Length: 149
Image 1 (cartoon, rainbow, N blue to C red):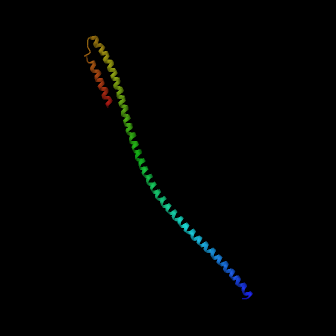
Image 2: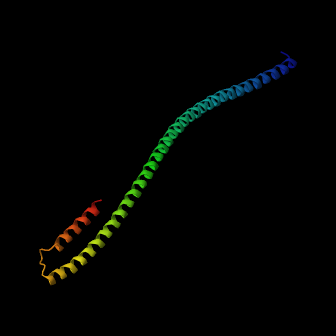
């Protein structure tokens, strides 16, 4: 080959080497892109699975919230009923307490009256077998009956 023919051949061989290097670089970038694509696809699947799990969790938590709200409503209703019963019971207690105090006042008046009568009877000759003892018993019965109501 002539000198003139070697020069263009060398140029062509250099160009072939450049193109081979460029091809190798492009092949490597292509492999890297495929690997990156696979990685991104895997991340996408993981995120989708996590989103589905989160959705199920939201549904479960929503069901729990609904159940707790129903339980709260029921408990509030029970509390209101208990407060109503407590009010009725306290009203009955106050009434019974008033009746007891009134019965005690009547019993005290009866005792005083009985002792005055007893003093009169003892001065007139009536003995311990007089009706004064029966009055004290009936006052006790009245007090007992009032407390039981």
